[in-house]
Length: 242
Image 1: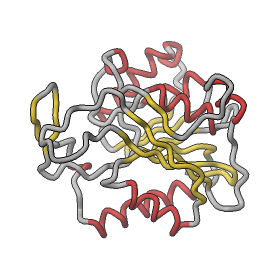
Image 2: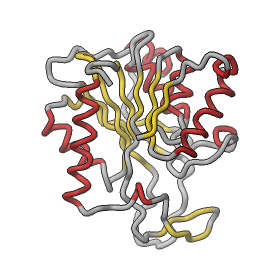
Image 3: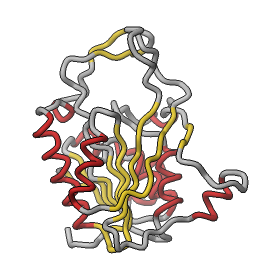
Image 4: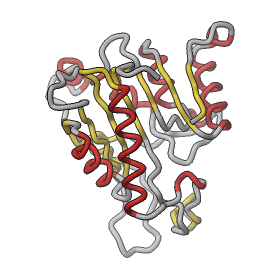
């Protein structure tokens, strides 16, 4: 893709959790196995991977564009360090608080109830877009803080199929409202279930989604055609297999 093509990038990269760990599903212990794409390659290889894809996104961002990256402690520190190495300017650390997290079955840790979303501009010279007034309006006339409480996706958001790391539509809608200029182009290099695409469609943003699994691209197509039935004849969606 040409350089400087996008105003905003949202990325939800692999968290590297699928190496034999366990989690809670429907109140029962279950093995964590999201797929080969989520398996750790070791700390150094994981960081090299994060650095490569972040550098590619930096090349694709417009001068005043920004990137948002979500993650847990398993990946987000590597992402933040790579951003600093590459010359991004870190703007905010958003904490997504989940009021309905799965329980901690081991009873040896605090219950994991948050994810981090890093917001950064392409470099220190960037004059990033921030819809301050809109965010204040959404927060009852007060400055919006960096802790956002939102429930995980419910059944309605998964009606066309499931993805193991699906993000809530409300999260992506707020991100686009906050940081993407009107008509700005959006990229999601880890497309997954296409939540970024749905949020972009609702807000009228051109969107490119990339994923290596065709079944998730098909899921995205179903969600977007449900959102915009007219696209069945004249598709405006760009999806690509990595």
